[in-house]
Each structure stands twice: as C-alpha cells, then as structure tokens.
Length: 561
RNA sequence: UGGCCUAUGGUGUAAUUGGCAACACAGCUGGUUUUGGUCCAGUCGUUCUAGGUUCGAGUCCUAGUAGGCCAACCA
Image (tube, rainbow, N blue to C red):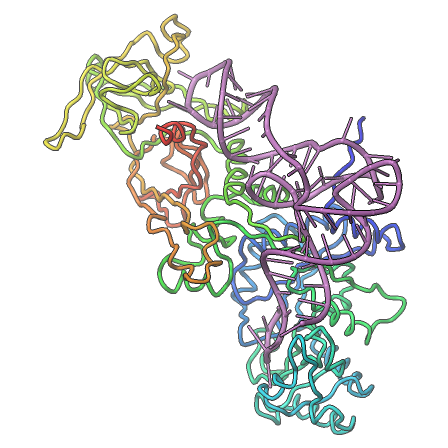
C-alpha cells in the first residue's frame, strides 16, 4: 500500500493548519451563500464544488444559505432555480438557511451596538456621505450625526423599523474609523430603509441589513468554521472581523473568512448584467439556452454534473488571476461522455449512396456495439439496405492518400456493415454531387469472420439507411464569443464579440433505434460528437443539441493544408 | 499621492513548508483501432527582474517591475 501524498490547495492547507492548532474536525462547517437574484453560472459551480467538496473531504456539513438582504433584487423563482442547480450537481446541503432568518437577531445586535456607542443613525443624503468618505489617499471626515446621543439613536432606529421614514432619509452606520486606509471601515452602513416586500418576510420589515453586517454574523449564527469567498471581498475581511468582535463569545466557533481568486472561463461572460443582456437582446433564447454559461444552460447543452465537478477539481483554486480555456471544460465532458454515452449513427449532411449490386427492396439488420469501451453496454440492430446516406464530407471524386474516406475507385468500410467501392457519381446542374453509385462486397460483412470481413481498409464511415432514417432537428452550437475574453476590452463592448454562427439548426438522419429517446438522453453520433435530447423534443419531432464534437485530428490536418 | 492581494511551461494548478520543479489540458512524434474517437508510449520549462540570507531558494528578506482589487443606502 503506497501512500501518496495528496496535494492540497491553499484553502485546504489553512484548514489542515487549523486542525493542527485547535479546531476539532467535528467543528468544521462550510456554506455556499448565493444571493437569489439570478441564475447560477459556471463560476458558481466552481464555488459549489469547492465548498461542498470540502464538506465531503472533511465529512463536514455544508449549509445552503441564501443571502437575501436586498428585496429589490431577489425572488423566490431564483431560490428554486438555485436549489435545483445545486442538487443537479449532485450535492446535498446540511440545512437550508436564509439571511432573512436572522433579521430579528441582527436587529437586536444592532441595538446593542447603538447602546454601546458603536453605531449611530446618520440622516444625511448618500451624496453627502460619499463626499465625507474621503478618498483612498485622503482621510474622511465625521458626519455631523456621528455623536448623536444613544437615546436619540435608539429612538430613530426604532422609528425606522416602524416605517415612519421615507427611503433614503436615515441609515444606521457602524462607528469605526473615518480615516482608515480601508475605505470600508469608514463608518459603513449597517441598515437602510427599503419599503419593499421581501420574498420571504413579506412586509414585516422596511429596514434591511447590508451584506457586511449580515454575512459574518450569519456565519457565526450557523457556526460556520470557514467562510470562503472571492478576492474582491478581501477588503471586507477587516469589517467581517470587526462585526464579529462585537458579538463573539469565547466558547463559540469564530468563523474565518478567506478569499480565493474567482475562475474566469475563456470565450464567455458570467456577470448577471451581461448574461441578462444576452437574453434581453435576443442573442440567446433564454437563461438556459445551451450556449449560456449558466448551470441550466450547461445542463441543457448536455453537460453531465460529473464532468463539471471533474472540471472544477482539475482547475483547482488559488489567489492569482486566471483565464481558463473553455477547451478544458470541453475535455471533461468528452472524457465523461466517452465512458457513458451509447454510440449511434446519424448523418447530418447527407449524400445518397446507392449499392448497385444490393437487391432492391431487401434489407438486413446488422449487429452494432453500443460502446466498444464498455463490455456491458451491449449491442443493438441497425437496418441496412440498398440506399444509404453518408456525410457529404466523406466523399470526394479525387483525393490524395491522406484522405481515408470514399473516393472514386476507392474502398471504405461502412461501420458495422460491408466494404464498399465507389464506382461513379452523379451531379446536379451546379456541379454538386447528388449521388454516389457503389458496389458492396457481400462477403465482407462485419463480424462474419470471413476472410473478406477481416480485410483492412483505411477508412470506416458511419451511415444510415435512407428508408429507415429518422429525421430529427439538430442544433449545433459554437462558442458564443469569438474573443477569449470578450468583456475585458476598454474600447469595445462584449456584445461586439458575439459569434454570429453560434447556432446552426439542421435536419439530421438518424438510425431508427433512436425513435424513443427521452429528454436529456445523451449519445455519441459516431465520428461526429456527443449529442443530448433537448426539452423541446417531442414524440413527433426529436430535437438534439450538440454538446461537443469529438477530438478532430483530421480537421487539424486539413487546416495545415 | 494611500492600502491590500498576486506573479511557476501556451493554459490551469502542484511541489512533503528551505532539498533533483510535478500533474492535467493543449501542442508535437509514433503505436493500436471497423469512430481520423478511445487507449498506449515518447516529446516540449533560464519558477517576473535585480540583489541578499543559506551548503542549498520557486519557497525566506530587500528593492523594483507588471497585473488585479479597494469609496453603491449592491452582494
């Protein structure tokens, strides 16, 4: 038994260290804290995999906590969608929590701070407060209300809560340090007045706590040991700790915020504003359009939860800037789908082949393996007849030796079938090839064991019997953006980089075994790629999404010329 | 003119905490193959720069350079 030293990421190192210096393993607890103001995307998926992955690794519970402190943006619809996505990824949260569960506690604590002279009601406009805040290089100045009497503060705060004031008239601020080098410590706002109904607390409240006041205290209430967030919150840590100091009791777990770099994926955008723009402007059809980097989009595209988890696992976690090539994500779907997707045949760009020596009206059903890499996958029958479709790209009148496909006078094997030879072809008035006449070798039947069947020919083509072919709508996707980092250009809008050819809808001809596919079924169309049945699919009209193509060495050869 | 963070192959992460720079992807060469897929083998690095500490530095120190972040009644 060789014990291999596992390589840990820097967050795991922090946890390991904490475990050495006093934390008990049983005290470990993590959380995934989305704001329910939109759909989860691939970036969230990484965060989910990180937190829940840590939970699995350490046998620690992970809470799903909705950071719902801004009723102006949040909706139940998003709560539901987020839960569905986390579940789909295959994770189980320990408890489902809401920051709004803690509104009472937060309010009580705020009152405590006021009583201790550590918070006050400011009655200035936001503009006045902004100018007082100073700049990164200049200290701020005190609000004229900074030394308001405790009694007055208490009274005003209560009146705020009671709904006696308009929005924007008063806020509760923590009294910290107006000259701190950290702008966030210059008397941050804890509460603001918002006369808006909340998706859970309805109209119970008209004052709502700010993120900074809420997050650390929520972690504390839930006794989260490690609160991981992205780097842009690094500055918030001082505040997180300050707020915690105000309520912390010795015998409790003191949550620790640590920050990691968010992972950027090439050729896409993830900001909610930008994704919304793609939907609103009609560039994509919906939030779950298969081109979207949302989890629901990836799901519809045919990605498997495991492939996304594997991806998150491989890219790891660190603190430096990064731009992960989307091809790595594509590698992981291929890798997983290669193992689980049944192989089938479908022709997307048909060219008719007629086997002149195959009896008219006759047909036979050939044995076809479902997955050559998986012995247990079994086999199925595919119909063969005189008239077949092959891909247009698989035939050329003349071609050089590198072209392993069909050419006049050349031979090729039809997958699971016979070796055929192209004798002639017919063209339309524009010179386009419309039909190829071939002869087949009846003794070369796949699996027959005959000498002829064992002959090696350079190429093997997929095909479909014309008479038996199933028509289906095939949606072929390409990258949504032509630029690897579309939203980082100062002089150009990300919309300018939208790939006009990101969607192509065609009719494909499939082997009849696909007749009864179900939504979300995934298959490999041999030699083409992986495809997934779209929810738009019906019994009358099957719709497939192309998840990702196969690795294509031939394309590279042709590119090079 | 302030503060915080970061810097390792084309990309993303490691490096037993100071001891021969590793893994995956991509690339390139071959082999296998009834998918130009899969699989197998091989190949591809002056650890941002300059100093310093040390027998020994990717790791520690100093300075520099580059990039990112920091002022919303957002999270």
